[in-house]
Image (cartoon, rainbow, N blue to C red; front, side):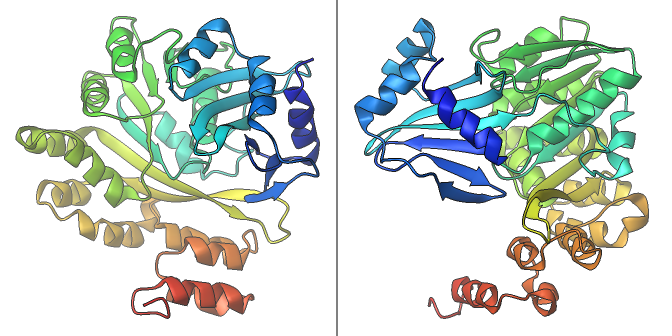
Length: 369
């Protein structure tokens, strides 16, 4: 058994989401959002390299030796599946192991709004799931693919970096392709998928202009495209897409967004009141004529008002979702405060005054000035 499996086994037994290994510090576990060291010595460079070498293929080792970061999936001898990132830092090597549960999540098991299921019933257009790293975007997308796979007869092509949840074909055929193993790039993967009779294309990340162009083309030509961006809100997502493409394509991009962008779902993971878990909290934007007009007239800053006033359609801002969770006692108020945009609305719910002090310290014009 590779020695690194011992750390992974310990992490799984503790219920952690991530295992961090880095030179100069002991192994650490991500527990309900917080990073905690385990009782072990600080890792040395040679020691950690020997652990990692035991689980790398020859081609992966060669890639990493040439100075590149490395992303891959790893299945431990106990059957635990992990998404792995290997990197170098100033003091030596580092690695992050993100646990991928064996059971594919469902929309209901994640506590997602029923609207997410309705969005899956679109036959074409684009749905974007956004948020910071570690906010559960891949898990939400896996639940959406699982719903499609269980309810419709489709050809689903999933382009991932790396493959995380493994989807056995049910009602649909699910083809999972991995960046660097099966496809040279996300853009190349989408281009190839267009020739493979797809109904649904999942793009692991819209990380460059070429990928965005191909994803837009797929969405405009009768396919349902699911994708992710590392953006925190509908406004930033739309602005990122527009700014990613050359100025001469700006009007065409805005037209695409108004006509073919079905929804932007932005999520955060917030602690539950007992501190033993986290729940996904969603900002939801659905494309309407009013929002399309705001995009076309460069008034995206007014989109939050549309989210606030169209809750009957299923839209909501992140603040609205956070406040709903606090009132329903499904979210920890102190942690929710940290994610809130308009902090004032949350202050009366906060129980730890130290949270308020930290927030005030970091505000423009506050004590940090």
